[in-house]
Image (cartoon, rainbow over all chains, first blue to last red; front, side):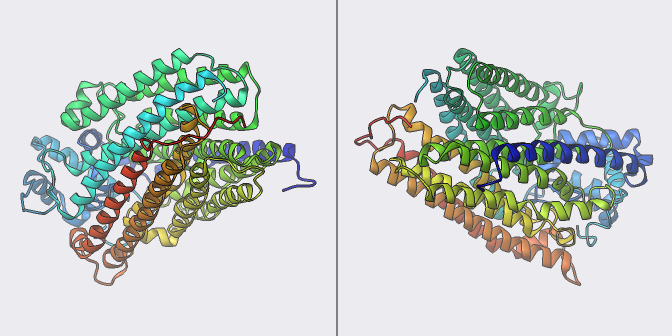
Length: 141
Length: 460
């Protein structure tokens, strides 16, 4: 850390490195954005899916569940819940909460309309069809 | 304390510690909910407790960063703060807005809170760590801008040291990347992609600048080592942090619908991410070993060394543990992630804020260091919290390994909830470790009230 390696050199490497790698991140992000249409299932982004995402967010589902592995780890992964359980099961499950079993983890009752339940299912179906590089490893999420 | 305006740091530090207590209370409640699932249900469901736990953490760390900045910058710039009044006004605005937000989470259903606060105009809520209502997010931006204005003006009229410049770059970065929290496209992949521009570029990017600058400041003060040496180290550390951390963002882009090349980029660069944290550890020990004075505040030295070690373990080692794509394929979104999150946040950001508080608080109270007995009490707090955090991390890691095995690796994968039952022993152990952590926090709080002879003020 001493001798020929001066503070000015350290400073220049910092600014050079930071700018270079930030620009590289920006460039890679542009490249990612241009490649997304092939993997992000945008063709199926219907109005119903968008309403479903809004419901997902405004009930703070991410506070217990993971979605594509991100979120809380208190309740099951929902990125692949559609292929795992199917739409009718998902709706029936949400409607029957909370189970009230003593000592078990509980999910709140949100009193959704049929339309809202369909929107949630549409959102989860859309999510399950995103190309996630074969994640999760199996259907249990 | 050399400049009277540094005293605005005091309320920030007190608020930080107060909110820290709140964070731990909700952490304990969640720890219990993991094993007694219906605890506090339906009054405080897990998602609400978690939101309070994580949001309080973020807010108290921000209070800590701001307090640290108000203490550090006038001393480094050798001038009074541009506007102490603005700093105090922003303190109250931030505290009231923060408290109102937490009360909103606790008292109003989240969807009602969303409707009341303009989420239908611009939907930003309901994403992990960015759950704050639109109004709170706007408030955060206003407070951050006023704070940055105040600090930048102070720096402009004073001496511009490397430490304060690096700190300010980190803080500006913090404010700028927070703006991505307002971008919430309907396309889930894009949403997730840019969500990390807040979360990752904060904690594995600009926050590391803030952390390194605060640590460098305290090390100069407590060791008396030549500023030139410390500043060179500072540049090297933050270079390593950004060179590895920026493209290291890619370790979040493995499985969210982004192209496959991120698995290579993310793996390679994030495998290097422990290096800046290791450098920070070496830096802290090196400076303390080369110290030119015995600073009377031994507790502050302990916190500083603890920051180096625990940040390396939590962010560096536990991060590396699951960052390579072939490993992450199995561990993604498991209790391994939770283990890493706990120790990394504690080791890097909790400890650096407490390091600064430990150094600055006695000075703000008019003495160089606290009485011996108060320091011993404070150091007991350090050890209890730090060791119990190590155990929290180990128990969560054990739970995570089992979970990954039973649910993802095994030939006969079990459903999520069945696996949770299987690993509940480790959740109980984590809860008890959490209780010890809370005892450590109480010990730490008690150290502020231990009376005794105080060391006379010396000028560093």
